[in-house]
Length: 273
DNA sequence: CTAAAATCCTGGTGGC
DNA sequence: TGCCACCAGGATTTTA
Image (cartoon, rainbow, N blue to C red; front, side):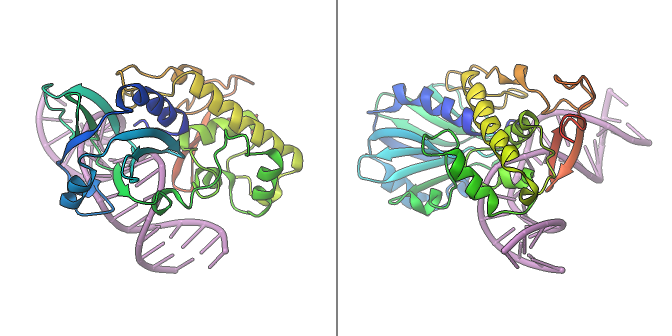
């Protein structure tokens, strides 16, 4: 279980740009048809073949590949998806569900044991990422803007932070970490927050994501890896996530695990009262 | 409107 | 030790 979130996806994108920009896709093999969402597999292969990769970006937890005929190849790794570059004659990966052949003889392989990940090929990326909320690390994501967004909501904060239409890129790990840094209980209702608490949450979200990005992401059980196969380092710096029963780094009390909105949620009952 | 539950998947875990 | 039921988890869809 790894759940690539904003820092992990951004790290992967950074690792893909060098080897992939300027390459042309010469063929594609889809070994699990449900992976491809927006068109039939035959149409997908026909349409992507011959397109050159001009740029690679991240939007939320999606990877967006800008292709030379104007199409966008969009990939979501969901829980256990990995993107690996391999020589074309490398042994097959056990869960390599989609293989992109490149004009330099290498392959981009989408590997996903749980088969949750998805691949899209669209002319207009809004079809896939058009409803996402703001990017939390972007310059135009301001405190005033965040206050205005929170003031429109009244539900519990944990599910709100996981809602990609509210804010893009945060998943289970960084929602828990940000709420801990802000000192706010995951079940607090959005409409009970003071201005000061909203500001603390805003700063906490950005601090946690920046730190995780500097650590090149969080790897559990080897599921998330960078393109070169290396693991992230942020698992060593987590404060509450997956730390049930261990001491809170702030007060020393035991970290608790509860379920909020159907998701495992870790927090410190004393610091996040 | 919101919220909860079902859905998709399978490796890992815990119980016996 | 071996078997097996069950769980996690992002996003979407369905139900209340």
